[in-house]
Image (cartoon, rainbow, N blue to C red; front, side, top):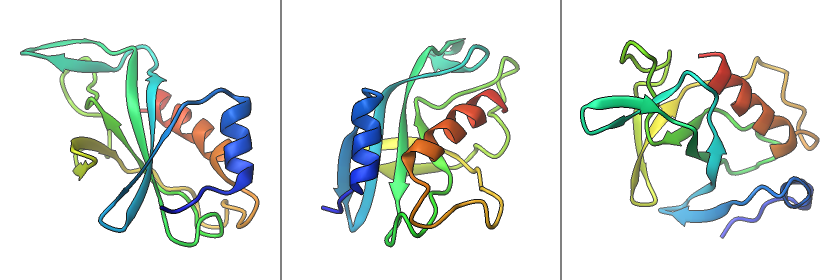
Length: 134
């Protein structure tokens, strides 16, 4: 299994962020369970949309990380806006670890990732921001 840099492991431990490492078909991902979802995002339960307070987040770790940037993330359950639409750039699905994840296409501007410096400590706040700015 691929290994996270010590810097990331130290950050996750210090912030008490639980995660699971999953290797599947040569793809390495981190699943963050029970991630806080900001108010205003909903999940589907049967035919109704209901508030979603927590979701799981999947971050795929590319080969060459952390010289290679993290890009986009995935959410389960899929999240919706009050009008039933998916948030912008979130319509794709990705099968991983026996689940169908909602793809959140979010890209950092070129040059914003500092190779060898940035990591989960700078990326997780970007996930939180993306969930708020939908």
